[in-house]
Structures are given as C-alpha cells and as structure tokens.
Length: 385
Image (cartoon, rainbow, N blue to C red):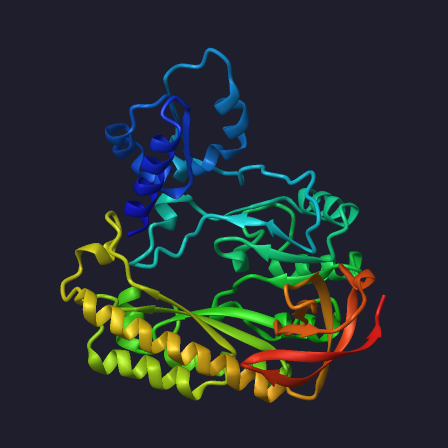
C-alpha cells in the first residue's frame, strides 16, 4: 500500500507540473527505483536514503542529465546520512535523528533493506545540532531513529543510548527531551532512572508491541514474549506512575487467527497504556512475511484495525481521567482557534487553557482539572520560566 501511495503521489506531481524535474527520495526510491522509471516521463532524480544530503544540489544542478539515479548499496553504508537543520521558524519542538537503519530483520519489515544496517550520529554532531535548536528558540527535542536503543554500538566512542541521554539531559537542562520509540527489551532500570533523575527527560515512552500473541511474535521475529512486555509495562508504571505509555500494534499479520487477534485485544485492554498506534499489516515484497501462508483477508484485517482504534480512544480517555487534578509543566505551542493556549504536558497530555500570549514557547505549570467534550482542559498555575 505504501508503494502504491508513493506512485500515486508521483503521478499527481507529474500532472500538476508536466515540465518539472521530479525528485523522488526515501525508502521507496531506495528499493524500487526501477519501478519509477516505468511511470515517469519527466526529467527525474531518484535519490536513495543514503544520499539524501545530495538532494538539493542534485535537483537544482544546471545541465544535469534527464535521469539522475543515486541509490547504491545501502547495506554498505557505514555512516548516517548528514542532514543537519540550520534554521527553522516558530517551532517549539524539533526532531533529532541520532540513528538510522536496523539489524533486527523483523519478518514484516523492509527497513533493513531500504535503510541499511544500524548507524549512529557521532556525539559531537548531536551536540552541534542541539546548540542550533536552542539558538533558534526550540524548547523541546524528540530523539528519533529507526532503532534508537542501538545508538552508538558501532561507534568507537564508548557511548550508548543511556549515556547519550544522560549527557544531553545534564548539558541542556533548558531543553525538554522526549524519546520517540524504544524496543521493549531496551526499557530497563537505567533508562527509567534517567527519567526519574532528570526533570527535563519527559516521562513518556512509546514501545512497539506489534502483537499480544506469542506465536505471532515469533513469526514476526520479534525478540520478546508477551510476558516480557507485560513486565516492562509494570516496571514503568511502578517507577513512573504518571508516565504516558504508547504502543504500536500491527493487525492482520499472516497467520493471525481469531484467537491471536483476541489475545492482542485482551492484553491491551488490561494494560495501563495511554494510547495505541494501530496499523494494518501490509505485504511488502522482499520481506520474509510476504511469502507466508495464511494471509489475512482485507475485510477481516480492516475490522481488527477498527476495533483496536476504538480501544485506542478508550485508552486515551482512561489515561486522561487518571491524570485529572494533577499539575504538569506544559510547553505552550500556540493559541488555537478557540482562543486558548495549548501544548503538551510532560506526560504527553494535549492541554488547552486560558492565558496571555506572551507565554507562547514557554513552559508553564497547568492544573489539569476538567474534560470538555473529551478534550483535556486546564487552568494556568504559575509560569516556570
């Protein structure tokens, strides 16, 4: 489905700009560049994931050939593609990619083939980028990557994700730091103690579950069991009772029968997670799972996705109710169409509240004291900075 959507987007660009040079980059360009040659008549640049830093100069180069194809063997890349951000305006939150690629080879996933093996950004480059974020007025940074828990393992710097996060929290106390996603087996006491010790490390963890059935987890080549996942969630809630915990769930994986689907639903229903990101399984050519028998019919898959997304809404509301009458530091992002300030709390509650405009891009204390039509609402307590 993702490949089909990519082709549709390319065709729309061609229709809207029949004489323009079309530039295609990302995972689809990396693994399916030859397919693009069959549908595009315009001058074309195909730039794979390992060469994104060449995108602008290649696209704007004068007298360049009709076809430029920069893909190469992504599996041979030893360094992360350098893509620093030098300037952005009006943003309160930034995203810092510290790692790319993956060595896990989950059976449904094309990433090891489209993004290569795990590679990390040197610590010096990370600090340089954070300095720029602060100069531009950014107050919150999300640490991202394909598998951030593997940060630094191939670098000769003696760093790992835990030592890096500790350094960032200590050196940039004015920057709120949020972790985008981390594998269950990488959520340990060291990580949780960092969140407890550093007030600028937000109590928010997003952890991929994918399935709540051990047989399906094994077919997915995930490296944990349901019991391990449950233990991780319990450990988080014990150490950080107010933390937000999000989960990824993949519905309709080959071989997922009614019992496996029900196991996933019941597991998530009973866990104190805060929200779910639910995706239907998509058959990707080149992955092991594409050859699996017992592919789930589309209508069945869609029904399972709908049910899990309804559970997601229930989980969000339940999390909000548990947090009522608590006070949180909120980074004010903007004034919304209703005239209220809004922003995310430390534990990822989207709060709206009345307040003066000069608080924009500042951290303030807000009491989460009510719900209005399912939306979390608060009252300004005091300014924190």
